[in-house]
Image 1 (cartoon, protein in one colour):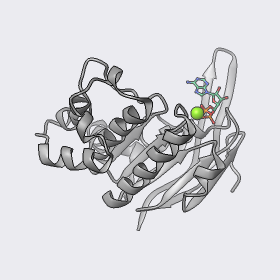
Image 2 (cartoon, rainbow, N blue to C red; image 1 turned 90 degrees about the vertical axis):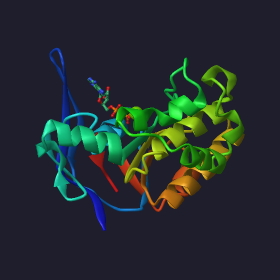
Image 3 (tube, helix red, strand yellow; image 1 turned 60 degrees about the vertical axis):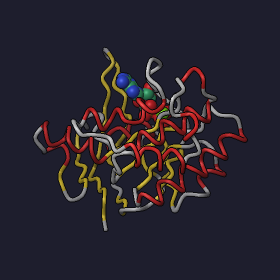
Length: 221
Ligand SMILES: Nc1ncnc2c1ncn2[C@@H]1O[C@H](COP(=O)(O)OP(=O)(O)O)[C@@H](O)[C@H]1O
Ligand SMILES: [Mg+2]
């Protein structure tokens, strides 16, 4: 089943007198449950594409259908609900809240959605990501790999249809990158989510079902 489809998706940034064609006429289709890697040189439009697929930015032109819905034609409230409930994000720099424990960080999206977190489910997810014994630690007390596993648990807690990850292991050393990636892929699979991951690492891209290559704002393969 199709989860995402784009038609002539285009983003132009205006910077003073300068125009940057960050993404041009992107036409892609992604099935529910796929793991897709996005590769391309720095500045080629990878993050721009990821943001547009996750309704984190608005296209200059073109469409994104998410689960059959024309995302950028939806009322703002419905789009915000999709963002909260159906899309999880993992960033290179973790983006944990320093004054909150790992547990509190993980349940943040559930609280923002005005739901009650289920402690057992949080613990089961933490167990799967091997951070159960770290739930009451603060980010400063965690290693990089542990921080990213907390961020992954946070992204997965709502059981979103889509997980967007922008170089999620880019700040980790090789060994913990490998470990985090294995746990991440396994947890996404168990959740049945679709994973779209930007990476510079060919070995990581090899683990994906498919690689989208992007160059100078155009998808080339
Ligand atoms: N907010 C912005 N304003 C202006 N230009 C931007 C902005 N974000 C990205 N760009 C430009 O758009 C192009 C694509 O950027 P980006 O999608 O971040 O590339 P990548 O993630 O592949 O490194 C680059 O030329 C970048 O400088
Ligand atoms: Mg980027």
